[in-house]
Length: 77
Image (cartoon, rainbow, N blue to C red; front, side, top):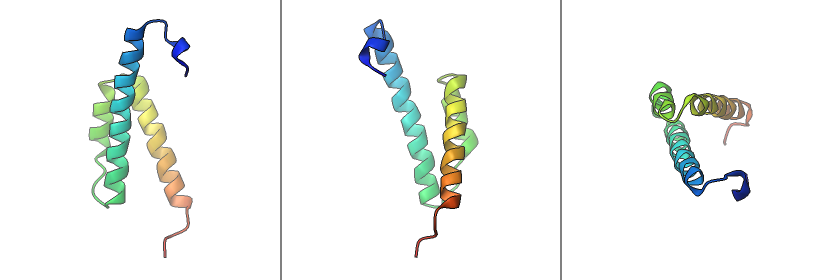
């Protein structure tokens, strides 16, 4: 998305805050999976819900993609 897609700088700032929060939630999920701790997906989806139903759907989609990619890669030796 280019800066011209946002007509108002205040809207641009709001999108950046949401994007940072969303990235943090995904990072938390990836870290939990990498360290073999409980991912606590419902907690992460609830936190994503604070940013709207689109964020929840995006979170679900990316978690599903990540898990599918993890399942199809070759095991580490």
